[in-house]
Image (cartoon, rainbow, N blue to C red; front, side, top):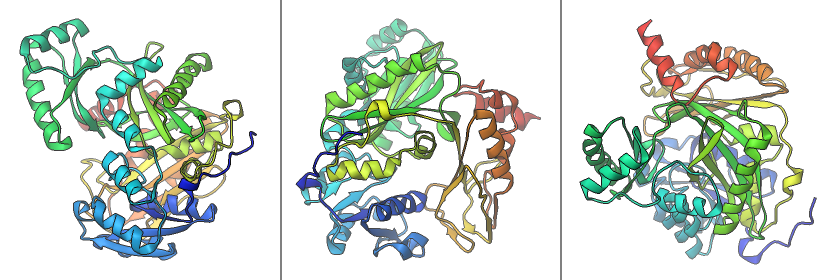
Length: 461
């Protein structure tokens, strides 16, 4: 192991305000305690009885139940940090985690933002500038120009013909599966452009779009990176996140099955090089489409990912602690040669939703039984008596398993799902149990379109 550089003065802090809620707030709080740091938990009025509030050193209500007036209220969060004496802010994922203006505001308030700099967030948050940066670093990208679409219809038609149909239209400032539309042929191109521009304007504040080749049978592959402020960066293996419904991930696994080390290694090293070129700090995830042995960059998430546990269990690295230590100014505790990924891991997102219609299900959890045993981990904030709010994302828990092989991990997940009981609300557990019995998924023979097709067949049966 390399000797760790001295901690930078700018990164010194002993108290972290967690600008988030739910399972990720509980996860970050645990990492802080293990590092000897104090925590400040915040909440909306709907989350006043969140269990992680009881174990935090300070617990402050910052606004009404709606996220816009609480978890997205930058002034309220910064005021809470000042009142509680926090020296750093951890944004978790979602909410303000990839907001460059918030990162900048935190730093200008004399606090440390546990994440990348505002300039890195801005560069990678705009999909056009991100693609340009990746091309410069030698990271393979989806075919299509690295410029925004013009307004001229004839020029747009020419770009689509050069790429070749089908194409996909995406919002430059988009994310989370929103602001994108597939165009199978020329006669629906302009209608798709108009609809996506308006959607992008409303959702992301900018009508800027770009166009890429739509791959027919790709898999969604991710590469996790960690970087410090001393010119060091490593990648921690890869994940497969192809099990998606409406562009939202449902199940993730690490490593991605069927991808040889000699194919993935150059891509991982290119991601590290890209981080070094843009001066990236902290953790981040490069997302790719993978088809016919080739990788195509689609975006970088400049934050902690929901699915980080599968990489933690295969790499043995506590990603949240590494993220915090990087913000403190510490150098990485490992070199690329120290990274070894062992075994196989799956994560199931357990959501408070109807398993057939997927409509959110709010209410009180009247009974909760969670699995336990070797190779089983549950990240959650709920308990019997917990009230699931209708105001936020439906994720209530993450069930993660690890085993020596993929087949053994599949079996372990089936058993863990069978032992998971949540009553009082509807959850997607029956849906997850059925998915883990599917033959094609068990064999690792799926792509990002498979789950939608599987659901259609189930409804028709």
